[in-house]
Amino acid sequence: MGKGKKQKEWAIWLKIEMHVGTASIEGSGKGTGYVTTVLEDGRRVNTPVGIVRGKENGPVLYAQAAQHGMEINGVVAIEKMLQLLKPELLRGTFIGVPVANPLALVQRRPHYGLGPEEPYGNRPRLNMNRIWPGSPNGSEVERLAHNLWEQAVQKADYVIDLHSYERWSASCTIVSSKKKSLELAKAFGLRFISVSTNKKELELLEEPWKMISEAVEDMGASALVAELAGQWDIYPKSVKEGTRGIINVMKKLNMLDGEIISPPSYVYLGKDPCTRVSMDRDGLFLASVEPGDDVEKDQQIAKIIDMLNICEVDLRSPVRGIVYHLGPSGPNRDVQLPRMHPFLDKGSEVAVIYES
Image (cartoon, rainbow, N blue to C red; front, side):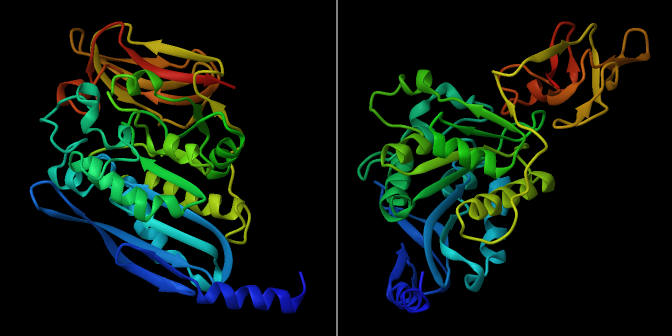
């Protein structure tokens, strides 16, 4: 491209205004504001939003976190991105929404309106990530989703939706089988990738609503979901994985210069061969390695404290591989305290190791 043509494009770019809710930028720079949602009872909920706009034209990348109120690693990851990004080094626009569902965050529940220790799947209509693109006259979360969709998401060429899974599994990306979305997942840089959808759960809803990633792909954009390990608290390792992943995607999209930081290999959950390990006795489970670690065959991965015989017994890996899951594996272990307890029964699955 000639210098004159490029300068002309820059001049046009700098005159274009980008606004999301009350956040507005003309040309290049940074701005913050909020998207206001008026609920049926008249309450007003402000969803925070930040914009970073580069000095050169480029894609619009939208990233959000905390659709579920106890999944908060992504909140910090996006806040850090909004602080770190420099407009003079950026091509295109980054829109960051650290807390997509302020109602659930303040209530400290997976979904707004869910009871204490009530499982995620009990009432899917309360789940913000099952009702996109929302409704202007619907429930509280339907209205939140609708306003974000209309004022922010529809401006995007690419979408990253940050979640947090329970702490006993390694962080992973979840995408559809569409080529562009799969390329984004690989660029994000987490070792574990799941190519899947939740069609069965979505069929329980009366309306044809979707997860945000599906709704985004239906409008012609590309999306990925990242599950950053650890709920109910902030896990620094997972926050770092989130910020690094967003930066990697921006490099992939030529929004930033630099080399993408990739894992040595990728593991496809549910497709690549894996070995499952169970407790051979009742006892307290004490991990010796972490999810995401490489292990050798016969390497100790945990100790079982046998309470009956008052002794420790080594639990060893039957294969050489990469640990995906290590710890409790019963249903609802992400919301019910007894399910999180490290006293596990004989026969309980405690490890999933993908063979290498």
